[in-house]
Length: 216
Image (tube, rainbow, N blue to C red; front, side, top):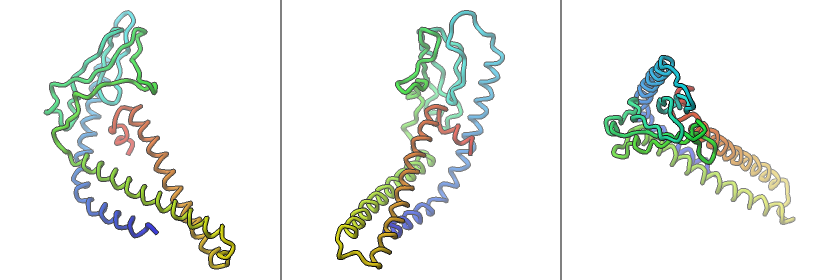
């Protein structure tokens, strides 16, 4: 029922592969710069002596490099230089809070809290951001399509089963066909929901998109 509409959207997505291929190199360069930043951070953490007393331990949270921090203080480090828009935010800082017990403060979900609002670039629109917005709009459109298809198929199935006059071999075939379409829609919607939960949790836990880029 919704297959022609979805195929049309897929064709629109394929038309954007030229722009996506140009942004692929940018993503790889960004990941290479992030990897270099990570290695420099780990080398610096290994070389610096450990302080005496209670501190929040040095760490690399997949976004920025943090040194040992005294309890009840706010750690501030410059915006990471690997960001493609670093020249726009070179005067900004990313912050984390060190609690009184010498543990980094976490948010309501138990994940490390971090404020990197000063390192966000809101002045330009990068190709990677355009691609992500396009994919999000595409996901929203086919989610609405599959949801409407699921509701309409469910209503049609109920009508075929509710009226005795409609019970015949031909309609039984339609019932099986409707059930197969409904199972397909449910499986796709469930898959997207589970993937969305999993990747949103990974992004918050590991830091940012760069960790997922490294797994690809």
